[in-house]
Image: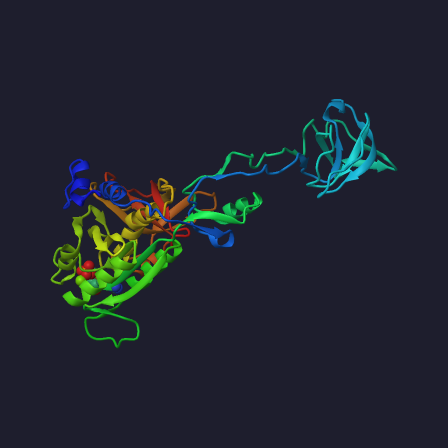
Length: 425
Ligand code: AMP
Ligand code: MG
């Protein structure tokens, strides 16, 4: 396996003290790899899992040409352009069984949505276009063209072709699609296990009495929520005291049990505590300063565990910095570990409702609230105090305004990129 040094050597101009956001992403892409284990689960249990193999369609969906409407099936070739039609109805085709009658020239068959098209008939005239006089069915000129209102065999999924690709995250539509193939079981990547704990002597757990200089641990809950939304198995380790024995025990326990560890706090430059020292002692860990705001300090590396190396994400302590670094870096890295096919971030473009000052040379993530104006144009404004400890700015926003590395100040009305929270938060 490549060491952090090997990875650094592949990146041009790698400087741990001045990494850009794209540098970090490139580094992490080389650091993490998909977990190899797979399992087979029932369709209900496949929600939010990642498909482990291409799924080849064993059948055609739909299995026959069938009607898309309630109406009358006719041969399209018998329709005369520009002329009204009159056909004799010789039977009714219901969904669920083939109609066994025979059709002659000038005949039509009453047909229900989903019923198999009788042989030789390829067009359906919807009920609302016809008038019926005993067994004669009439409709006006040109209400349908040949082939209309018919669904073709295999038009959704073709037998023998890939219906879903490996790496696809299985959402509600994919579950339905798997079921439409008649498959009750599906191969998925094993769920990722992620352990997390907060560090710092000033951090209080819920239930502890408050004391001067102490703050309640919010990172435990934001990280929990972010991880749960990703569908990983979480191993919650609470707050770990800033003592070498406690930290060592926590890191070892986490590395033995999990694929990745997320810590918060104790990685900034001025830290007088033991977190950095213990990370360095136990693993192959780099300490970075990233050209971004919020979230400048971060530690990344691997700590050996019982089942192999465990990836470490040492996030900063500030609550907004934790969420931003998670969304910017940890989330894509974990998706890669989960076997998910990586997708480029999709930004929404909105016009800034205010001027924002920004220096080129770092990436800034401002908490934004995107709303449509009456003319349908999307506007975004920042949500109050943008301090890296102001968690309320995250609660009020519905996305992060991403001001990219080279970007300068934004004027009112300028288009900006927004990373919407969607299902992530
Ligand atoms: P640090 O990165 O350890 O210097 O922490 C930066 C700031 O974040 C400090 O004000 C900490 O008190 C705060 N902080 C660190 N960890 C947490 C946490 N788990 N919950 C809430 N605030 C935290
Ligand atoms: Mg600290």
